[in-house]
Length: 103
Image (tube, rainbow, N blue to C red; front, side, top):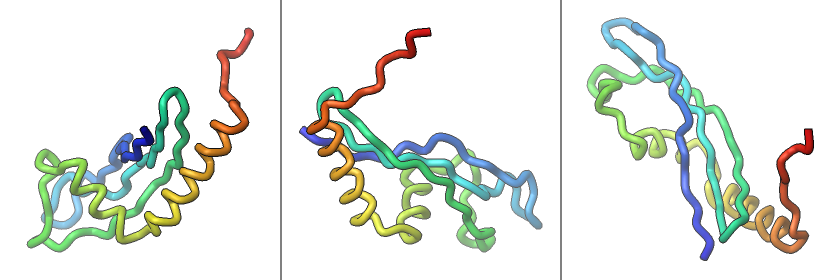
């Protein structure tokens, strides 16, 4: 069974922006697709505009779902997933893999 999911690797914050503290500036993410022992991914870095005071979410209250909801409007998810699925199909068909380095 094929599974596609997000992974937020890290968040880069600005300590202070006007009256706001710990403002997320960048999210570093991966979009991953897996099937059995095979997997592939894309990774990216998304820049976010400074939020309005009324819509600001304190850093401690941010969820992964919040970050993903900010990334989604800035990418064509259908195209990304199509690319990832084609790439995984190719990996499975060619049975390529990355063994540990021999040194």
